[in-house]
Length: 501
Ligand SMILES: [Zn+2]
Image 1 (tube, rainbow, N blue to C red):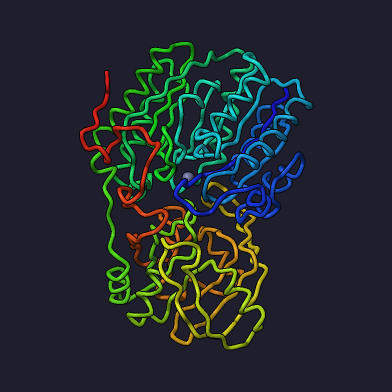
Image 2: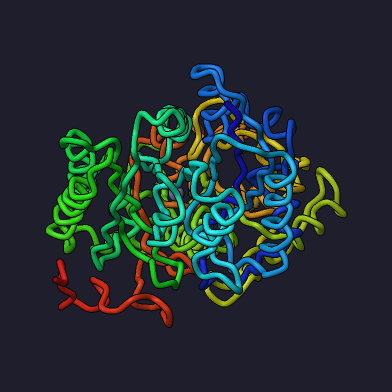
């Protein structure tokens, strides 16, 4: 049994000012080797907790030949250029054409990719794959929990599988499960029929941790529905709010064995449960930067973890926001650790050299969404190539990171600033350990994200505060100019109704 696997992994923030071109895939903070082909995929993903890690495990376990074709991934950012989409997808499809025939195909997608041409790029990947292999070769897709699942994605595949945890620590087991079901589909043991329900609602980033109420209740419904008669598997896509596309929002997917009505009922059951919780699920919460710093400074024992919601790198922001830093300096915080992406400042520090004293403006340079550049004076303590590795499970199972040339700047005011060159998220303490910094020893740690930093930093923190900052990933969704999302959509249109029939 020969099964092909490829993927183009991207979460597209259509409000981000970063355009994603081919170069962005070739120099990614998440995948330091750029676009991977063939055996390179096993080399860099075989021993990770990512989906590819799971496909390889399943191949050994269920006795099929996994043929990894191509894997392109880059950090969440703006819309993917048509050129990048066509070049990467074209190459993957050519490999699929040249190396067949296949018993099955696995698509490793994130699920919220938008290209200039295709608002539902994941659906387009599925459509062209189906067109190429024909109707008789099973095609499945594994997805991130933040997928904006479309009807096209459901229609053009035999089955969709989505992580169930956020932070995403289950990518590998999810992928193993998906492969197990794929093998059954190939062997004719399951006749896959599916249903997708898209209640008109968006879940706030503040409410997307699957271990916290009320999201736990939504996941409970997904787990319950999986045990309904004739149901093979169930999923929810929490949705990714900053993709301004028709399918932006929450979706529920049920896969049944030969029973379309069972699939429909299970999908509706899950969707109905989420819909009844829509008010709590869409609530935006959290203090301002000023209040968060005040609270942190008043907390006797640290570290206090501040999660910068508006500069959520894993959701496509700039990584150079200065709103919290500005408050920290204003209120006199000294034991303070943060990253700021600023290639210009990195260059200045590298030119000055280790041990030099510098005065420079940092951050707030990408756009006008993330605060003003701030002038600081300090000493260049460390210069590194910015590469770090975490073999432990991280968000979505990434292991080999690349922050680009990185500088540790010890400011005279107190805060320790890690200046990075790429927008790599704060999802592992190894980012700091690799620079001889121990986040455990700081009173305040700022992580630019909401949920993805939690596995790494929550366990060493005495307190965690989600800071409701402005930025390209602000929780205040009404501040964005949506043009393409469906309407009505709750909470934008509070009178949205479901079910519509
Ligand atoms: Zn995600």
